[in-house]
Amino acid sequence: MNVRRHYISTAALAAVTALGLGTLTACSSDSAAAGDTGKFDVVASFYPMAFLAERIGGEHVSVTSLTEPGQEPHDLEISARQTAQLEESDAALYLKGLQPSVDEAIGQSPVATKIDAATLTTLEEHGTEAGGHEEEHAEDEHAEEEHAHEHEHEGGKDPHVWLDPVKYAEVAEGVGKAFEKADPDHAADYRKNTAALVGELNDLDEKFETGLADRKNSVFITTHAAFGYLAERYGLTEEAISGLDPESEPSGARVKELQKMAKADGVTTVFYETLVSDRTARTLAGDTGLKTDVLDPLEGITDASRGDDYFQVMEANLKALQTALGTK
Image (cartoon, rainbow, N blue to C red; front, side, top):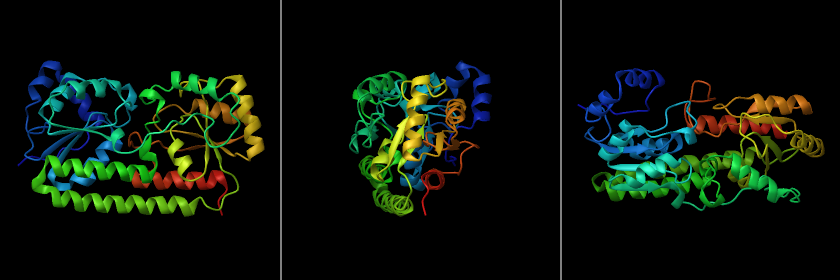
């Protein structure tokens, strides 16, 4: 009996890598590899897509994530082994524009079902001034941000739809329909699982709506402009440290701008994420007398994550925002 495949652990990946590329290619037809599990084999590009595939597919799917835990998704370069997995899979689930190497590999792959999450909801542009702040420098800052933010969606569209429970639910519904069409024998279960997941996402949306309703302020600072959809959904304003790599030091001009804004808007916290260094956030916080905390963009789950899955980490994000925004 084939064992259901989960994400590749760091230790397992290291062990496999040590075997050499020739062995990797030879092992691509092993029973544990995508495409030979006796189930509906799905290759997902990174954690938010893999989570959807697992929850919607349930016992009928075998999911392989191309991005290992702890790896920044946009840094991913597709290996020969992963290319072979794609070729042997029944479906590929990805978010076009987030990971160029994945887009290219899936575009060239003969996999029968290609599901682009970016087509299942409406993508928007989110500049650093989104949310109603003054826009006198927005154009220049947005251009700088697009240059620095390596996984900005093609055309300037923000790809981080999974951080808005409502948009993530829209994507889930589209994935469910795609699974039903590709694997009709289990369509009823896919519909049931999708409905359950969408219900949980609606509940999460309500938690954010009520949890952030009574707050002292609405502005939060992040090192990574990933929370535009979340901010828009709940009437918040995200201020990202624009024009910089997440691990770079903030410019003196931007520090002064954020310091002025933080004082005017009652900002208390600079948020950083788990997959990159917190140096930028701590530098800015030290210069402005602010606190630091984690706001997780959920691009991957690691031991450092504040939870074991999407829902747990999102609820941790809610608590962090409540503290920073002074909710009652």
